[in-house]
Structure formats: structure tokens, C-alpha cells
Length: 236
Image (cartoon, rainbow, N blue to C red; front, side):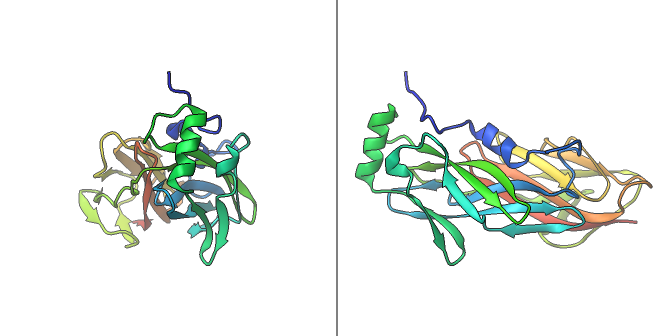
């Protein structure tokens, strides 16, 4: 039986950690200090290649930002051959996969089948609050983050970063053209989100809700890749 690395966690668990909520705010609430998603580009690193790390960060009272982490370390129990892969870069933090020989040695020591990706858990801290999440990347094969699938808002195509205007006090349908197997998260600081973990959701801006803010959709692929789209949004 194949045994996982001691530092590995399920992709779904890593995704949940990246969107964790420390208090009673609903998970779709963007008006809150939190890491919405952490991302490696690319999420799977062939031998000798490098990925950059960033995160989509929500802030109470202001729009989301895309930021590099202020600190990244490998999780306790990481094999020594993988523990020194993190280094600063001009854009923040990067991770470099070791040579093919080193990866093969790690597979052998951790009972991972030849050629299979090696999961590596990173503990990433985003400032200045700080906010810390676990994030799993994969070594020894190649895969990219999911592309920006088409987003529909109220039956109309929505272009990323383009302001949206929606009617108030009605259900406004949302959908994203993502792989059916992918995990989807919708978040907003305008109105109330419903079915926030479905490919098709809806938002309803009631009179007591915030009438303007931001809409975000995050897509997490089954192989650990992450993509997101953001839209300023206002109800009238």
C-alpha cells in the first residue's frame, strides 16, 4: 500500500484551510480579514523548476488584494531533502524543486510510486495581521492552475475586474464554466450569497445588506491548482 508523505494533507483540506473563518462570519463574506486562497504558479513543479507563491487576501472594509507571503516554511516532518526549497525572490517568495535524483530518493524513502507527484505542505504567512494557512504543492510532475472560466452574472457574461451592476432585492444568478470536478467558492461583500460552494450560485442584496462591494469566484482543481476572478459589484 502506498504511504503518503507525513507532511501531506488532502487537497480539499488545504483548500479549506486557505479559506478558513476564525469567527462567526459566513465563509462567503469578503468583508473580513482572511486568506481567500493561496496559489503556486505553477502548482506542480518538474525537477529543477521554480514556482512563485501568492495569495488572494480579503480585508475588512476594503477590496481584496493579491499579495506575496511574508514568510513561507515547510511543515514539520518534511524530508530534509525538501526542507530548503524556499527562498526570497524579486516578487516575494519562490519554491524550487530539487533534481530528479533527489526526487526519486524522496519517493523511495516515502514509499511513493516512481513518477508520482510528491506532495509538499507549505506554511504560509500573509501580513500584516498576520494570517497563516497551509498550502500543498506538488513536486516531480507538471500541471498548471485552472484558466479563468467564463462567469455569468444575471445571465450576462462578466469580464474579470469589470464593474458589475445588479438589481437589488432579487435573486441574481451566478455561474462559472469550470471543470465539474473542481471545487468552487463564491464570495461577496455586497449582499448575501447562496449556494456559495456550487458552480451555479446566486446573490441577493437585501435592503439591510451592503449595497456595494466585491464579488469573487475561486476554482480549485482536483490536482491542487487554484484560479480566481474578481469583480467590483453594486446593487441598484
